[in-house]
Image (cartoon, rainbow, N blue to C red; front, side, top):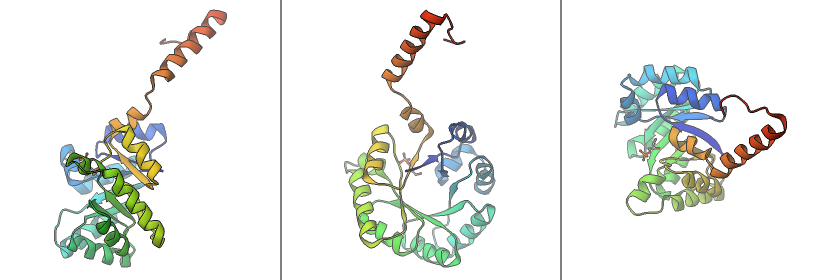
Length: 220
Ligand code: G3P
């Protein structure tokens, strides 16, 4: 499973990059707006930090506008994947980008039927939003399972990018379901490290070692 960071914050991206486990980045207009820097400038900075696929979303809602914006975004760096919403115009733009060799992440996917449309339009990624389905009383993970199953049936090459993952359990369940990618906010990746038995076990190892060799590493 590839891990993407779901953030446009440069400090979080630098911290994630240091762990050596981040394969890419997803952004959306809300995340870019939070950083207060124009889309193209911020995407350029992100590309300099993470060497992997970087999703950059169009804000136009008509296909022609999406094509203009997307072509510009794709020129920023070879790793840029143009993100379009799962609308009629988004799917039309995706089909055209696909023919032009521009990779696309189709976002705001909330049903298996929509995911089929994205695959047929040649999307590189489809982004089903797990947490937002849970928010309205549905089961977001069932959607991930359904899409993975359907794509396998037809050998669609579109990768399932599980988005709106909010907890460690979401990440584990998306991995069990066979999602190709999980996009995680920084705090969700960070939480994956935590286990009280890891802390307790490490303390005990160091105490035992220190009793015999009187060498307690600095800072403990
Ligand atoms: O990038 C899109 C998605 O991951 C957003 O997540 O938590 O705002 O539903 P959330």
